[in-house]
Length: 306
Ligand SMILES: NC(=O)C1=CN([C@@H]2O[C@H](COP(=O)(O)OP(=O)(O)OC[C@H]3O[C@@H](n4cnc5c(N)ncnc54)[C@H](O)[C@@H]3O)[C@@H](O)[C@H]2O)C=CC1
Ligand SMILES: CC(=O)C(=O)O
Image (cartoon, rainbow, N blue to C red):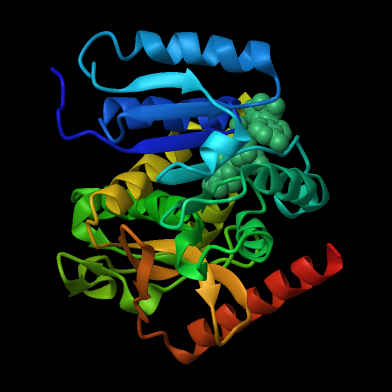
């Protein structure tokens, strides 16, 4: 069935496993009229476009998928940056910074000038550092340059808690905050199920074990299949939908933190202008220290990358 309301254009920069899965999720969820796919590997790009187009011939016939240039990407409503190297076994997200920072800088240079209301969504890793650099490399307002951050980790956390409490994940409000990486932490003190404090619903929760499982989930998937693509596909498409629909949904995404001098994840209200505002959840003193530790780790990562 066609959707006459679809008018927006989303550019997917990087047509590898993650870029293609995000595009697929955008098609299934009928988020945009046009999806531009940009990748210097033309054969891979064109094959992904042909395959993705097959998904638009039944059900969602309103979305067109085509190849584009970096310049065209800069004129899109949303630009999703997945271009870059992914972790090989034994590598951390932080190990990718040198390679992915240069790819980011050259890709963004080729996209200029940006449409004034464009929202730039960083997905490539290390996502918090790349969000910081994308803000430096463009003249877009900081609020329009965001990273998928710990939205994915928070979804993983909700999945575990939902199983333990035997409730739907959507009834759980629980966040992983800070870096999408080693220094992330769970804000246990403000986690709720159906509005009730988590500790009143589930007793004897192994909080440190769960936090470790969430942190290590990507590594264990990558060890066995070489990539994580479906979780981020759903998460990135959901951010795009919230932005284009000006939905004002609250999600933990990476964005500029004035007081800390880095980009990291805190819950934020998402709308057409990107991050409309940060939601400062009340953290206990231990969690406040974890947030500062995460900011320090990210600052060092950014400084060491030159
Ligand atoms: N933020 C998150 O939660 C997640 C982030 N990722 C990250 O996403 C990134 C991409 O992962 P995959 O798609 O699996 O990698 P991939 O290797 O399958 O695809 C990357 C693509 O980027 C392309 N590329 C390189 N330079 C480019 C440029 N200047 N312009 C356009 N395209 C360019 C490559 O040709 C390649 O096709 C990695 O950094 C990975 O760590 C992956 C999963 C989750
Ligand atoms: C690869 C990655 O960042 C993730 O799946 O969380």
